[in-house]
Amino acid sequence: MKGIERELRRRLPWTMRKHLTVDAGLVILSVPDAEHFAALASRIGDALESISELPMLPSEIEDVLGISSRERHKWLEDGRLRSVGTRTVKLRGRARTVTFHVFDPRHIETILDGDLPTIWREEDAIRSAENRRRAAAKAALARKRKAASGPGGTEREAAEEASPSLAGWDEFDADGLLR
Image 1 (cartoon, rainbow, N blue to C red):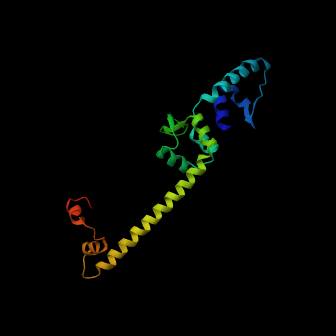
Image 2 (tube, helix red, strand yellow):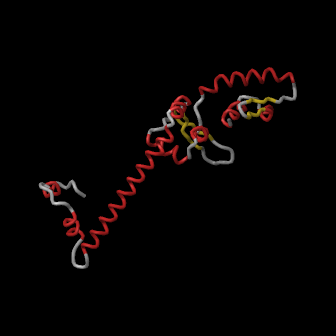
Image 3 (tube, one colour):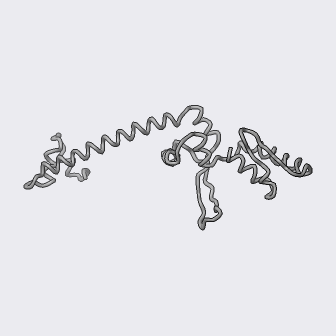
């Protein structure tokens, strides 16, 4: 709703912007002069017709999908959320410009219809558990190598003892593919 209100206010003259509010699916225009009402109402009507074609902002995506900004960034990087481009704006009070991705409303609609955020969260939880398990195994192997090297041995000897004895392993290692 906030994005729709911003877009509608953007299309009104500066002095009339404070007279427009959007609340619970209603657009309320409270104009003090009846003479300006017809012109402003037609502008708002035209804007409402074209508003469904406008790309969605990141904050709107987070509200609509019920996701955090961290999830939005992660899913955008993974390619699950598709950006239709970027927008660059200079906000008041800031020295630099801000660039952000915008999204197609139809793509967001298909994501909502398929309840994909829930599925993506489950996949992310499985992937995180797998990464934690892999990191724990790697740390355990490193501790084992360090303990096996002991005071007199080297880490290289401990690594050779810990590695499996497979046929052809020496040739593979000689090629320099293991590092």
